[in-house]
Every structure is written in structure tokens, then in C-alpha cells.
Amino acid sequence: MKALIVGYGSMGREVEKVLLDRGHAVTARVDPKARADAPAVTADLAAGADVAIEFAAADAVLDNAALYARCGLNAVNGSTGWYGRLDDLKKVLAAGNIGYLYGSNFSVGAHLFFALVREAARLADSCPEYDILGYEIHHKRKKDSPSGTALSIAKIINQESSRQKKTVTERLDRAVKPDELHFASLRGGEFPGVHTVLLDSLADTIELKHSARSRGGFALGAVRAAEWIVGRKGLFEVEDFIRDVLNGRKA
Image 1 (cartoon, rainbow, N blue to C red):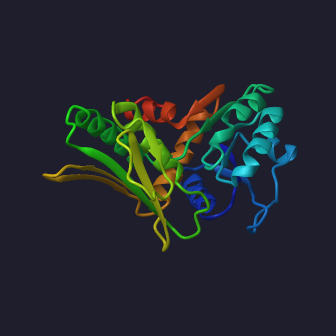
Image 2: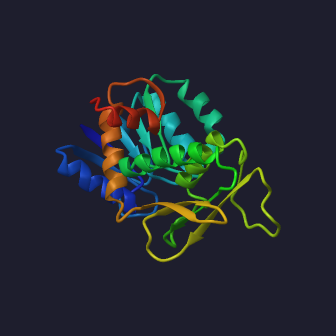
């Protein structure tokens, strides 16, 4: 597989290591700020690859997707902070016939965590004495808050809870409402990512936590997702890929 790396920061470098370890080729590295082969994706760069793996700035996602669609290049997008423009992405991709997979977290371990959170929220829904809340911690260089993973976790809880149907992520200068899930964010240090969900009552606390030790797990998942998307057509979420992984189905 020939991969174009779009976004050559910490994640892009981890992705490169995994690609090479798995016997794939890196055709070029694209980044407007880091030391890379090119500052932006071009048609020539797209033509030389089988798939693009993107961990770039949110404001570049739509322009990059438009170029992928024009050039027939399948892509995996792990960028966050752009999901409010998903409808715009669908319009952009309609101009082409490619496979495009996006998600906030490609770590297989994180998706096992999501499954555990879903089951915990479902069980807690029959126990009104338990309230659910959460928080996430990321390194000081992370630009978006809350993390895309935190929003995915909150969405799962909202889906499974009959009481906490709304998510609040900003600072609260008031009491949390009965129908709200408060999910807080903290930035600092070098944390690759820690996500914690608490089920709390007067009697006790149940804590579910996923702590990433490094970016390696995210990078491996992104490369496996790229192997999966090659040859496919359509718009996919990372859950579509993970479902095959957890069910033992190969790309």
C-alpha cells in the first residue's frame, strides 16, 4: 500500500513508523508548518498514492477532501474539530467516487472502552440513584476542546440514558440540570489522552477509564483503517471499520 501522510506532526510521524513496520510505502508527507515534502496536497501527490492518512488542521479537511474526490484517492481522516461541517463534507465527496473514513479515535482499545461505557450506561439507566459524568485530559498542545473522543463517549451515554439526554462541555456556574451530562476537559503536560467516566451515587462510585500510553495505538488503528478503506467506496465512520475488527473480519 502506498500512503500519503497529510499532517506531519506527532501523529503523522507515528503513522509513518507503523506504515513502514507493516511493509507499506510512504509516498510523501504534507504539512504547511512541519518539515515535510510539501506544504499542501496536490493532484500530483494524490496520483502517486493508494490512500491518504490525514491528521491535519480542521480548517483543511474540506479542501483536502475535495481534492481526494477529484483525484479518486481514498482517505482516512483522524482530524477533529470539524464535525459541525459534516453535511458540507458529504456534498464535497458527492463530486467523486472514493472511500472516505473519518473518526475521532482509531485506537482499538478506545473502542473496547466505548463498548464498556455503553453497557455501563445502559445498566445504570435502571438505577436512578446513579448519576453519570466524565472528564478528559490531553497534552498542552491539543488545539480542540473537548476532544472528539470525549464527544463520542458523551453521545453514547446520551443514547443509552433516558435521563441524561444532553451534554454540556463548558464551565458550569450553576447546578447541572437533571437531563444534562457534564463532560469536562483539562489541558496540560504530555498526556496522550485520558478519558474517564464516573457512575456516582451516595453509596459508591464506579470509575471507567481509558489511558493511552502513547500515540502508537492511535497510529496503528489509523493504518489498519487505511488498509481497510483501500478498494471501498462511500462515506464510513471509524465504527464501521472497528465493527469488522471486533468481529474478526479482515479488510
